[in-house]
Image 1 (cartoon, rainbow, N blue to C red):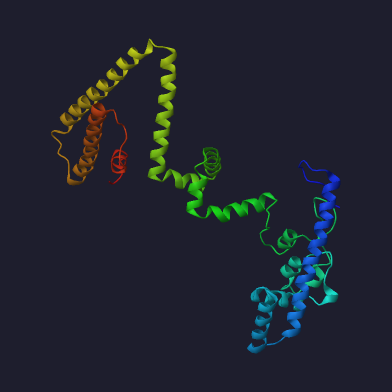
Image 2 (cartoon, helix red, strand yellow):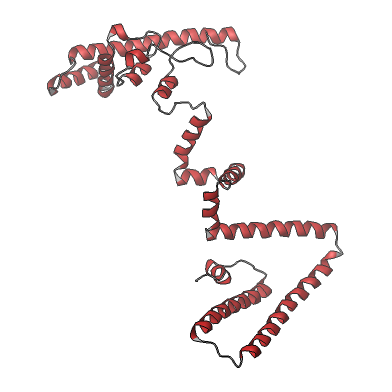
Length: 297
C-alpha cells in the first residue's frame, strides 16, 4: 500500500483514500470494458459495413455517452479478450497497449512503482514503456522534453524570459556551448546589448568608486579631457607625417580606394564624437557600428 506523500496528511487516512480510490478506478475500468463489450456485440470484430456503426451511434446517444468514445471502448475490448485483461491495471493502461502486438506479454511484466516498491502498471509507466511522454514528468529527461515542447513557441519563450533568474540561467547554460556562443557573437543586436550592459556595469563600478572618493571626480574629468585632446593631436600629427611621406609617391586606384574607405571610418568616428560631446548619448545604430568595425555598411 502506498505511503502518504510528503504533505501534512495522516498515513492511515492516506491509505484509506488510496484503497477507496483504487476501488472506484476498478469500477470505472469495469464500466469502460463493459460498454466496450456491448459495443463489440452490436458491431462484431471485422465489421466493415456502415449500417452497424450507425446503430452503434444510436446506442451511444440512448445510453448518454460520446459515440467516438464508445468506438474507442469497442476497439480496446476487441484488443483485450476478457481472459487476457489484467484486473490490477486500469482501462487506460489497456488502451495504451492495445495496438502493441506483444501487449499480452507486456502487461504481465509491470515495472516497479518507485513510491511503493510494488510491481504495478501506472498510466505514466505505460507511456514510458511505449516511449511516450509521461503525463506527469518525473525524471530530468522527461521534464526537459516537456519544457522543450513549450519552448519551441516563441511567445512562450518571451513570456518565460521575463523572469530574470530563468533568463540568466538559460543564457549562462547556452553560452557554454561553442556553437551557440559563436552564433550569438555574430549577432549584431546581441553584441550591442552586451556592450551596453558592460558599459553600464563599468559606469556603476566607477560611480561607486567616486562616491567613496569625492576627490577623484575633478581629477578624472581632467584626465578624460586630456586623453581626448591627446588622441586628436596624435591623429593629426600622424596624418601630416604620413601625407608628407607619400607626397612624392602617388597612390594607385586600388590603394586610394582602401584609404578612402578608412577615411570614411574616420569621418564617422569624428561625427559620432561630436554628437557624444553635444548630447552625452553614446548609443549608435547598427550601420554606424558596422562602419566603425570596418565592415561594409
